[in-house]
Image (cartoon, rainbow, N blue to C red; front, side, top):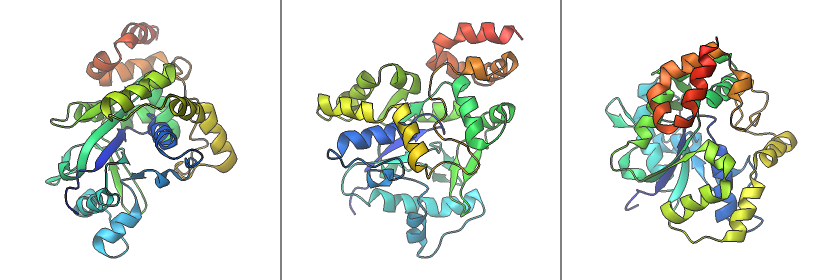
Length: 289
C-alpha cells in the first residue's frame, strides 16, 4: 500500500459540529448534485467505528468486550481505512489522540493531518446530555471523567476522556498538522471560517459560488429538516432529535448558576485559552446562585 499517511482526521468531542463539517466538505468537494444526505456521508468520508473494517482486519465478525481487545484490532482496522482510498481522505473520530496499552489510538503511520472541531463546554453540556440521554448534572460528570468511553454493541469503542483533556491532546499534539475550528465561529461566519480551512490549511483553490452553495445547503435548519424528513442513522438510541438547537449561548437558558460554576471549575484553564470571551459572563452567572 505504500505510504499510508492518508487520513485527515475530522476530530471532535461528540456534539461539537463534526457532522456539520463532514456534510459541508462533502458538498464542496463532490460534484454538483452528488453530495450525500446526512445518512450517506460515508460516500464522501468514513469513521473509525466502521465494523466492516474491523471484521476485515481479523478475517471474521469482530466482537470485543474490553478496551484492550479493541486496541488489539484498531491499528489494523485503521490501516485498512487509510488504504481504502489512494489519496488523502477524511475520517471522523471522537477519540483522544493518546496511547492505550502501548498503542497509539491515532497512529502517526496513517495520519496526514487533522481538523479539530471545538464547542464551548457551556453549550456542549446540554447537547451532550441529550446525546447521552441523561440529565445535565450527569453529563457534566461524564465530560469531567478521564475514563469516559462510548462504544457499539460489538465493542468498537470511542475513548473520549475529559473534555478539556480532549481539547489539549489534539490541539497540542506534537508534529501533527492541525487546523482548529470553533463551532461558534462556524455559526457566526461560516463562509470565511471554511474558506480559511480550505485555502490556508488544505491548500485547495476556492470556488466561491460552490462554497456559498455548500454553506447554504448545510445550515443547521437544513440539516434539522433532513433529519425530520428522513431520520438520522447516527442518532444514538433513545435520543429524540440529533439536531436540537444548534446555536451559541443556549447555556443561558439550559443551565443553572450552580451548573455553570461546576463547568468553570472543571475546565477553567482550557476555557481561559479558547473561550476567554465567556469568562466574565459565566463567572457572574455562576455567582448568582
